[in-house]
Length: 212
Image (cartoon, rainbow, N blue to C red; front, top):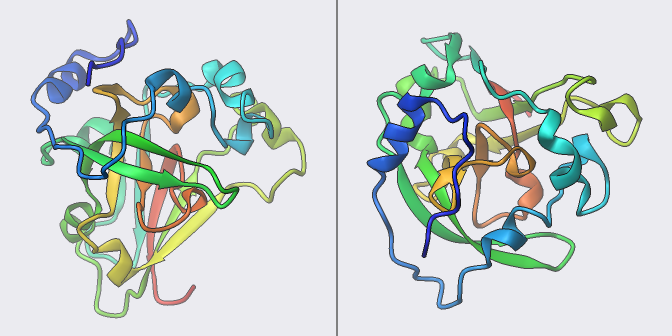
C-alpha cells in the first residue's frame, strides 16, 4: 500500500522511528480499507456520537507532549513520555481486520509494537491478573466529555493472559504514518480478536490490578 501523508509537525524522532518499521504481508484475504475511510468513519465518543464527528472535531487534541503513567501491581511504575515508551520497541505494520459490534468492519494496516513486550518491560507482580487502560480526560480538548454521554474517563481492560497474546498491540500509527487524532492518537490499543470498543484510544494510564 502507499503510505498516507504525514502531518507536518511530527517530531523528528518519531518520523525516524516510523521510517524503520517492519512491513507485514496482508494475510486477511481481503483488500485494505482505503485510508480516507479509516480516517473519517470512527467511533471516538469524546469528540461526538456520529461517525463523522471525530474527524471533524479531533483537531483540538494536543498529542505533544504526551505522557503515560504506569501504575499498580508492577515493579517499574512511573510516568513516561511517549518517546520513552516507544524507545526500546521496534515498530511494525500489522494488517488486521477491525470489527465493530455495530456490524461493520475494516481491514487496517496498523503501525505499532507488541503489547506483551510493553507489559513485560514494566514487570507485573505475581498477583496481577488484569491490565487496565485509561483514556485522556480533558473537556477543552475533548468537547463531548462536557456531556454525560459516557462515564468519563473511558476505561477498558484485559485479563493478563489476553494482554500477553502476541496478536495484541499498542498502535502509534496507521497506513505508514502517525495516528491521526480521530484514530486515537498518539497511542491506542488494538485487540484484533475482540470488538473495536476494546481497542481504547489516546491512552494516558496503564494499571496492573488483581481485580476487575
